[in-house]
Length: 110
Length: 120
Image (cartoon, rainbow over all chains, first blue to last red; front, side):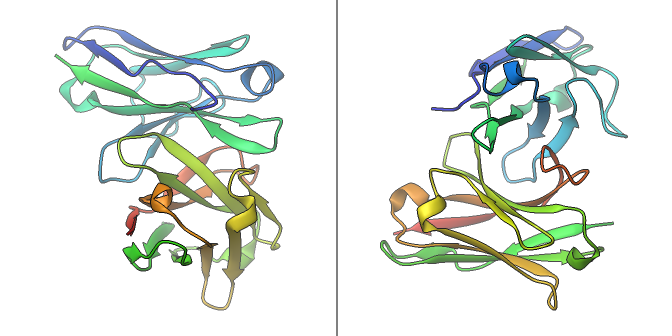
């Protein structure tokens, strides 16, 4: 059972917009800790996609955006491309002094 | 360019100790300011934080693993290590080493490729 809750899967057609939600609690996201997002392809290293709620590292397309409100956060992907098909994880920090993750969301590009 | 590479046995027997090492290249652990971290991903499940060590040697562990876990650093070899005792099948996972991005320990931008450890 992951501390942060994500939908197991989302899907969209090429060119469409999809969002992935991440719900936490008052001890992590709601406590003001930032949310970060990773893109992960099986057999490869996870890639930092978004940090500090809404900042994209250099090299990440601006089709990816992040937001946070209250105890939840979202990752939005616009102009969906086949190469976006991957697992996406949200991550934050918890007052129990732990780095915490969501269970991951599998994005399928139809 | 900082690179991380995990190494260690791919098969560990139940009740024995799992030991992994992460070799760091492109940067010196002793130069300071970062958290050197371990994560794992169980088969068909999500990522889990195991713990990390600050360059100074301070350690921070996942409470669920703390009683079995030791993370250490060897600055002379520019590597850090994970030791997990009394393993069971539930410890079968891909193990990743990583470094945080900005010295806060809050998010991680540099990852190794991962190594599969099977407990059987």
